[in-house]
Image (cartoon, rainbow, N blue to C red; front, side):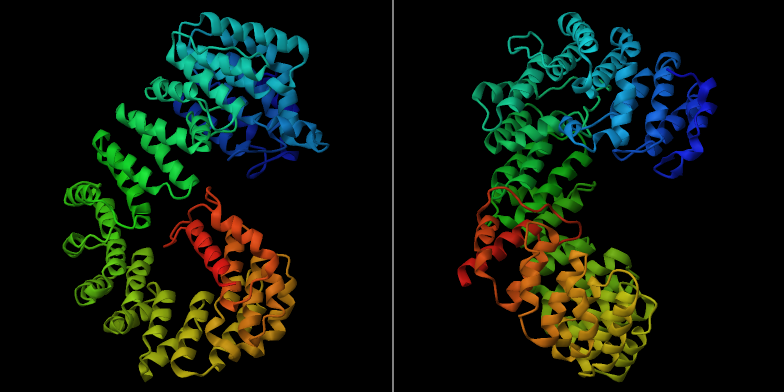
Length: 620
């Protein structure tokens, strides 16, 4: 260990952390020894942010370890926090230690320091404070795979003592998990402590893999429903919360996960554990929306506050469109919550609108919001005469940002009726409120006047490149004049930086984009995959020929966002190589979701991937 007196012996200026030179680390470590609690809090927070930033460690991290270990033993009241900092710094995948690159990694140096210092930190396993004992166990676990035989044996004896005799069941459960990492498995299903039985079941499930035997599921359901309420339930290495590992295990076996979630909810949904597990199952597995929405419906009465109810209702709103016919009980419950006067009303109304319940329209018009207006426009396209005036009023009142984008997006499904909002769209374009989507909708509306074309032409000179592109394309759509669009896109494609967004928007130009081919063709072999994908789209748009585009797009197909975009482009071209059929079958028939949800996306990417794959398999 090294005391603060030795800090100046390290050349911190030559080391780096998340924010550059690590010259501030000595003062942060010295601050740990101060008397002011707020200053100490801030120092710990800063150390978490610079030598361990969002799971990444740096050259300055390992040199800090001996000083942090000294602080563990000499800073009263902060041992648990400092031990946890050491544990997360040393977090690594044991499989990585066999890599030839391991010795040169910053985490390898951290682990080497912690292994060397562990014997001096082991007295913390006997600390009177339970948080310190629990944090110390996580330090042992962090380097368990790297301990030399003698230290491993000593650590094993100390951890064994905690497992056998600690007065706190949660500490015994932690000790059981650490013994497993030290290679000493222990059966504990007959323990009198629920925390220990739960830890034993988690370890057994991890070893066996899915599907889990019934006795494990029963233990997970029974003993996991009411966790130890202590505030020191620290996460284990590789996780962000104490429940991460258990949730991950249960989502691997969907039948077990649904069973456990239902029993946790029936037991009161303490800590929202059951409803949270249900949400994760919906995001992990396909076609489980009916069971998950049943879980959310059952969980609603158990929520202790409006925030908990709002989370359940948000989950329902996210998936309810996947139900062909949402049940009466579910829609009635949503209607009841949508009429409340707390924060659960908004997500309930959004879910009700997405359920296609006719009662939603009146509530939306009574308390309109951008997202609910858009949902109502989608589910009630025949109500344009009632919804468009409200959309116009809200836009006219000065809506900006995402709110304005949602409102303009609501107009898209109304077809020619959306022209009623032309004055508000023009004002958005003038005032640069959601101007990009306003320009696109103006182009779709098909109304041509000198004022409109002049406004669009003016916007093609904006400093915002996305607005220049949208306005140029709208101007072309309305007038047929490609010159302004070619001028704009020539400049955009000549500019430094990412160009894939602009390439992807060229489709409305069609063959009029041909003069841009000298700029597009070199990008077919760009290093950035999004650029190659968009260049292939643009090449097909300009030439009408699939010969150059299809091989590029086919090479990008995969369960990734860019792979999905490439698949959409192939579908639009109408040519899918035969060798892609096995990949399409995997997309179409996987029981697991292959893509996660994306913020601000109207359609879940995985649902889009599956539907597109099935359509292509049927048509080719």
